[in-house]
Image 1 (cartoon, rainbow, N blue to C red):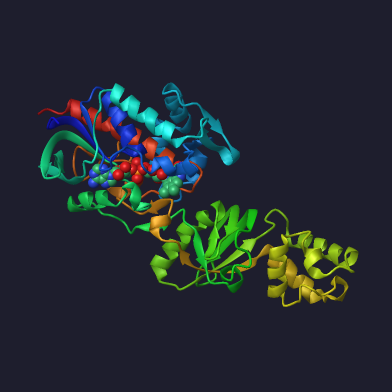
Image 2: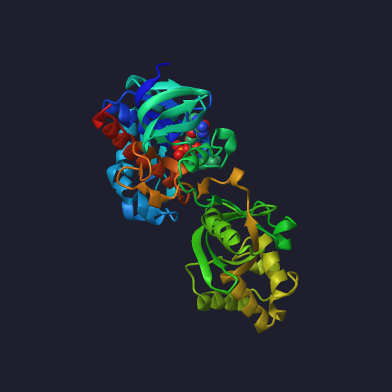
Length: 425
Ligand SMILES: Cc1cc2nc3c(=O)[nH]c(=O)nc-3n(C[C@H](O)[C@H](O)[C@H](O)COP(=O)(O)OP(=O)(O)OC[C@H]3O[C@@H](n4cnc5c(N)ncnc54)[C@H](O)[C@@H]3O)c2cc1C
C-alpha cells in the first residue's frame, strides 16, 4: 500500500463508498479503508436483505422524515436527490422499483447486488480499497488534516472523510470508532440513543403474550410526557411482541421514547393507540350503537370481532371491565362508551426501547453545528469531512437513512476532492 493520497475515506458503508467514488471521479487519488473483510456489511441486511435505497418523495417530505436534524441535510438532498440516487444506480446496472409508501428497492430485491455493483464501480474508478484496515486516529497539524493512522502505520492525505457509521448493529462494524477519532480532535459528540427502534411495554395483556404476533395496520400512536402533554404522534403499522410493540409505527415513536427517557429518567411513558385514526369518536360510538342494536343476541367477543381482531376484542373487553362472554343486549350504555374510548385510545405503558444493538439507526453523533452543511467539512479541522450515520442525524425508516448516507457521502466526497486537488503541498 502506498502511503500518500489526496483523499482517504474511512468506512466502507453506503456513505463511505459514495464519498470514495465521487472523490475518485473528480480525479482525486483515493483510498477507502474498511475494517471488515468486505464492504457494506450493514447494507447487506438493510430492508430485510432487499435494501430500501431511498424513498420516492420530494425533498420537503424527505426532510420531514428526518426528525434528527433533517434541515441540516436539506442542501445535500438537493445536491444528490432520491432521483439522482436512482439514476446513479441505474448507470451501475441496478434498476429500481417503488413499493408501498414510496419505498425504493433494487428490482432484483438484492442488497448484495447493490454492494457488488458499488465495489465494482469503485475499482473501475481506480479507488484503492484496503480491507481489514481499522483506522485508529486522524493525523492533524496546524488545524489541517494530514492523514490517518492504521494499525500503527501513518498514511498521508490532504483530506479525509470519516464515514464509520453509528453504534447500532455493532456486529456489522459500526462500533462508534469515528466518535472517538473525532472526539480526540475536539469535536462534540451529542448524546447517542437508539432511534427507529421498537418499544417495550409493561402492560400485562402485552407481556402475557395475549396478543403476541398480532399486527394492526395504519394505527396512530400518541405519547404523553410526565405533564400530560403530547410529545409524539405518529402513524404506521404495528405488531405486538412478547416484550412490547414493533413495526414501522412503533419504530417512528421509538426515538422520542429514547430521548424522553434520557432527558427525564422517567420510568414509563403513557401512550395511546388509536385503532381507527381516520374515524372520529362520534362515528365510532355510532358503529358500536349499531352493534348493540343489530347483534344483541351475540356475545360481546363475537360482536366486537367485526371491528377488531378477536384477540384484541378480548383485551378491549377486559380493559372496559366487562366479560367478553356477556350477551350484547345486556351491556350497559357506560360500557359501550368505555369501549368506544378504547378504540380511539388503547392505553399502553411504554417502559423504554430495545437496545441500541437492535436499533435501525443511531440518534446523536457528531454535532452538526461543527460541520459545514454545504461541504460536510469540519469547522474545526480543514480537510476533515464527515458523512453518514456518524453525524447527529437520524431518520424514520422507509429509505431515508440510506438517502442521508448517500447524499452526505456525495457532498463530502466532492468537497474532499476539491479541497485536496486545490491545496498546495
Ligand atoms: C437491520 C437494519 C436494516 C436497515 N434497513 C435500512 C433500509 O432498508 N433503508 C435505509 O434507508 N436504512 C436502513 N438502515 C439504516 C442504514 O443501514 C444506515 O443508516 C446506513 O448503513 C448508514 O451508512 P454509513 O455508511 O453511515 O454507516 P455504516 O453502514 O454503518 O458503515 C460504516 C462502515 O465503517 C466501517 N468502520 C467503522 N469503524 C471503522 C474504522 N475504525 N476503520 C475502518 N472502517 C471502519 C464499518 O465496518 C462499516 O462498514 C438499516 C439499519 C439496520 C441496522
